[in-house]
Amino acid sequence: MAELGKVLRREPQVLSLNPTLLEDVLEDIRRVGRATGREGAADVLTGELQARIDAVVSRVSQAAYRPRVLQLEWTDPLLCGGHWVVEMVELAGGISSFGSKDQGSMRLDWDEVVASQPEVILLMPCGFDLDRAKEDIPTLTALPGWNTLPAVQARRTYVLDAAAYTSRLGPRLVTGLEMMAELIHPDLFSGMIPEGAAANVADVT
Image 1: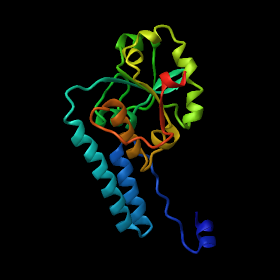
Image 2 (image 1 turned 90 degrees about the vertical axis):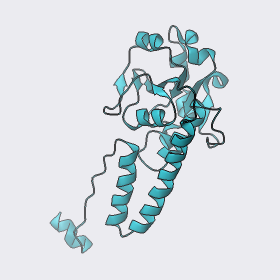
Image 3 (image 1 turned 30 degrees about the horizontal axis):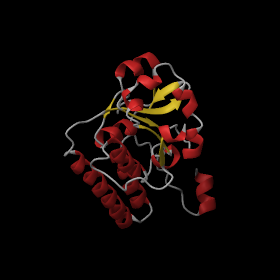
């Protein structure tokens, strides 16, 4: 590190960023702002992001019912999202069928998934854009009992651009939260999904 400091004329400051929830993401933005002399800009950005989060939470409070949501980060093996993904589902007005805000991705047993009777399914393969994520749909729809699930029968199964909106810990997670809010509560939200960011599985297959 000392040798690198000589080359750069200043010893670099290393910031370790390892957020697990949305609040952590906002705090990391503030930390980077303080470290780079852009504290004011960081405060403005995090203030705007927090206002958008608060707007979702406020509108969700009007929901008469919170559906059971299955958020899938992988299809083979079957994994559900944890940490901030569970938090996003809850903030968006759903009840996460599996996963924990305290733990990362968790492997699922398909029989348990069927027994949980999810009312909304969000397929968001970690790190994949929408086109690549669509390639995993046949693996999911071929599972026994798929057509019996309430989410499938109600055409409430969706595939998302996870690379942009759910996998990467940055400001666009707030857009991902807004997208989830519209997918979970279309009666309360509209216009929240960027073009090409999500698709109905029933329209793809």
